[in-house]
Image (cartoon, rainbow, N blue to C red; front, side, top):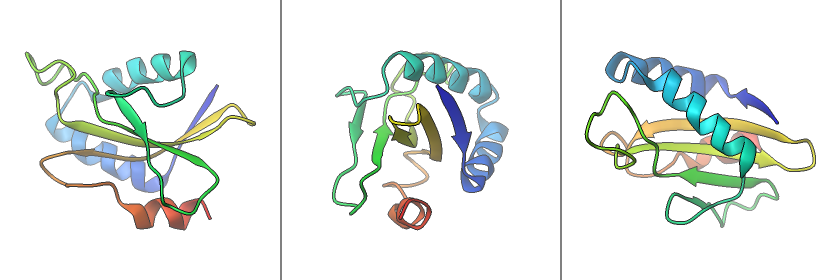
Length: 114
C-alpha cells in the first residue's frame, strides 16, 4: 500500500502539528491500520456518498491522538482519504478537528478527483 498526500493536506497537518505535537506518530498508527483494512468500518469511519465520483472517499472520525490524553479515539480529529483499490494507493485529502470545522471540504474532494 502506498500513501500520498495533497498539498492542502500537508498544510492542514502543519497547522495542526502546532497544537497536537504527536500527530505524525498518530498518523503512523492510522497508516498501519489502513494497510490492513482500507474500507469503511462504522462507527470509526464511513464512506462519503453523493459526490458524483467513482473514487472511494472515506471519512475517519475516530483517530486516537496521544497529545489529547484521556480522550482516546474521541479526540475529535477527522481524516478524509481516497482509496484506489486497483492501484493499492491511499491519498490523504483533509485533516481537521471537529471544533474547527463542521464537515469535510467537498469542493477540495471533487476538485482533486474528477
